[in-house]
Image 1 (cartoon, rainbow, N blue to C red):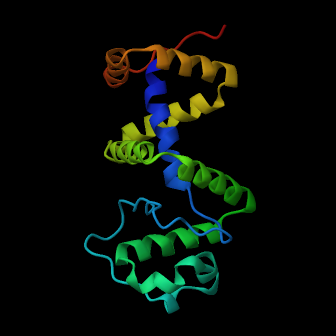
Image 2 (cartoon, one colour):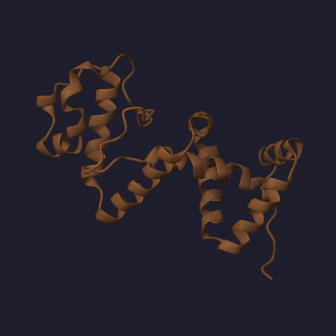
Length: 182
C-alpha cells in the first residue's frame, strides 16, 4: 500500500493543476500555467484566436484578458478558450471544487508548482495502462478513511529517499498483494 502512495501523492498534486480553472469572478492569474493539452490535439503551432470569435459566456469568463488578448501567444489563447469553455460546462459543485483547487495552486510556492508540473508530465508520459493503474490506486487511496490515509502519509514521510524509490520501483515489478479482509 505504501508503494501506491508514492504515485497517489503525485497524482493528487497533479490533479490540482489539471482541473484548476478560475471562475468568471476571478480570471486565472497571469502567471498561472496553461492547462495541459490533450494528446489528441493536432500537432504544430496553434493559430491565434480573435477575441471576437469567443462566445459571450467565454468573454465573460476571460474578461480580465480582453485588453491583452491579442498580445498573448496563440497557444495561451487556445488554452484559455478551451478552459473557459470547460468552466462554462461545469456544474456549480464542479466550479466550487475547481475554484478550491485553483486557490490551492495559487498559494503554492513556485518551486512546488514546478514540481507538480514535472510530476504531471511524468504521469502523462506513462503508457495508458499504467496511467489507469495509477488512477485506480489514487481512487482507492481517496476512498480510505482519513485516519488510514494520514497513517500512510506519515509512513511515506518517514521513509528515506532510497526506500521511497524502491517502493515506487516495486510497484512496476509486481501487482500489490491482495489481503483478506480483517
